[in-house]
Length: 320
Image (cartoon, rainbow, N blue to C red):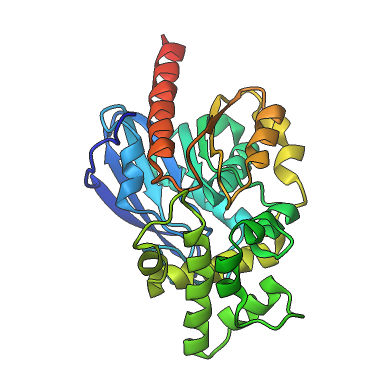
């Protein structure tokens, strides 16, 4: 199993105002003359971090990361206003134009795969290839799998699920109840709910529980943006028509891509990746045997690095 690429610092950082409310944090790293690659973080609301630069060869790629509306270092933090899938798709185009990129590889994990696929469907001519990890298709069944007692995640991790719902009444709808609390004026209740929401996701993201997972996902800055924005999106069915991605998959049939999914991914069920690969002629599926959801899983990280190398090789050959 190979290691990650070295942790490098950004060459440039930018702040891009995309409307009267939101300003995005953007960074570039790697080779300024390399293959442009846009990385889309998960959540929604998760934000990018330095480790996301380590899956791509810095000598071959011009890596572009940005924090989506309300996430990470973008402002205003945890904002739900004018924050939808389609405003994010428009933001991606604004970032591309701002940086003078003609075409790019688009990579993403978890929610980042949803956003990458929606962007590619809307702008197929701008996408050289896709590198996707932990497929989330944004359907009702995918949301139910993760948050409701009759979904798969609750049945696999019942003790963690009880911690997630312990403040709710038996008759409460999970998403609606959390939404009410996460948008409540009571800061103490809001933060408490945010931590429960984020820690639930963190606990089930890896095959083996990481010792610092509650500290990491319980950090107020991350917990608030992750919980509020995720709950906002999932309350509104990700602002997508049901089964939107698979119903519009013909728009990206010509785009080459890698689909990487852990066999024991409990956050996003493996069936999502399988259905996507069956519908997408040029989407190559790799099921990683001993792995869960997170990109920090060693076998997932290995698969991502190999996929990005293969994509660079393919694009080089394609231009010869």
